[in-house]
Length: 209
Length: 178
Image (cartoon, rainbow over all chains, first blue to last red; front, side, top):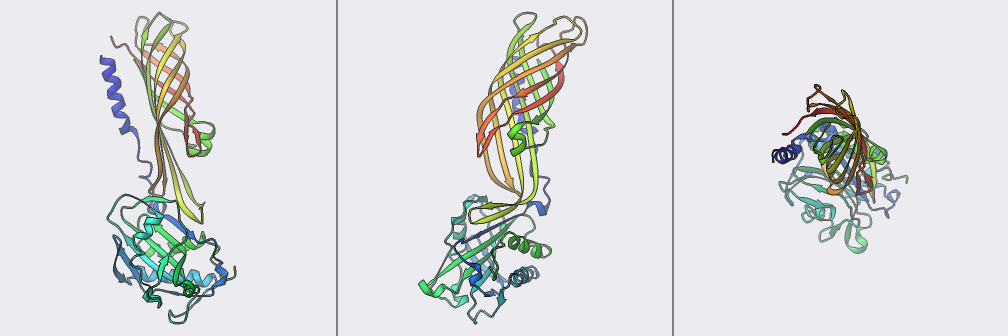
C-alpha cells in the first residue's frame, strides 16, 4: 500500500515540475504582429490616403473616446512614415483619398477565446463612416482569418479601408488590418517599431505594385 | 523501488520540428516485485518537460502573416508496466535490461509571443527499452544506486507532430519497500 501511496503522491507532484514556458519572455518577445489583407486587392491601384486625426479607444466593444496622447501621435506619424515610403501621398480627408486609415486601441476586460470574425465585432459596429463622409455605408472585411487568441488586455489595430471604390455599392471595404498584441504595446517608445513590423511583413502595400 | 533523475534528448521529428533542446527536468520511478533472483515485474512512471523558444520570425497565414517569437512546450508522463532482467544478481555491479510498455499522458502547447496558440493533451502509447547497472551499497544490501539509459518510443499525433520520441540517461537510488 505504501508503494501505491508513494506513486500517487509522486504523480501529484508532477505538475509542480513544469516550468512556465513563456515566463522568461521579454516585453519585445511577448508581442505578436498580425496582418491580414484582401488578396484580391491591387494596392498599386491606390495613390492617396488619409488617416484619422486621433486614436479611437474601443473598450469592450464600444467607442469610448478619441485620444491624441504622445503615444497616439507617434502611432499616427509612424503610419504616415511607412505609407510615404511605400509611395502613397497623404491628403486631407475631404480631398477624396483612395485609402482611409483608422488607428484603434482595443481594450477588453473580457477573457475568452475569440476568432477574427468575431474580433471585428468588438468594434466595427461603432465605426464611424461619417468621419470619411460616407454616412450610412457598411464597413466590412471580406476576408476571414483563422487565428484564435485569448483576450485579456489590449490590442492596437490599424485598419485600411478602400474609399476609392466605396461609391460603387455603398459599402466601405476593409483591405488591410494590422494587429499588435502583447506587453507594453501602448508605450510611446514602441510605436514606431511596432508599426514598422506590420509594414515589413506586408510588402504588397506599395503604390508601385 | 527505484527513483531516478533523468536528462532526456528529443530525437527525429520531435527534435527537428517541435523541441530541439534537451530536457533537464525529468525523473522516472519504478516499483518492481522480484519473481526470481534475476527477473522482476512491476510498474513505472516518469516525467519530462521539454521546452524551446524560437527567435522572432514571420509566419505566413492565409491572406496575411504573423510575426512572433514561438515557444513549443511538451510534457510527457509515461505510466507503464515494466519487466526487468538482472544478469548478475549478487555481484558488485549488476548489469540489467528492462522494458516498459503502456500509456503516455502527453501535453503539447504552442505559444505565439505570450499568447497560447494551440494546445492538446493526449493519452497515447509509450514503450521504453532500457539498459543500465545497479550497484548495491554493500554485499548484502538491497539498496544501491542505479545508472542507465533508455529510449522512449512515444507516438503523438497532433497538428503535424508525429511522435515525441526521445532518449535519456538517468541516475538514482534503489531501495526496498519492505
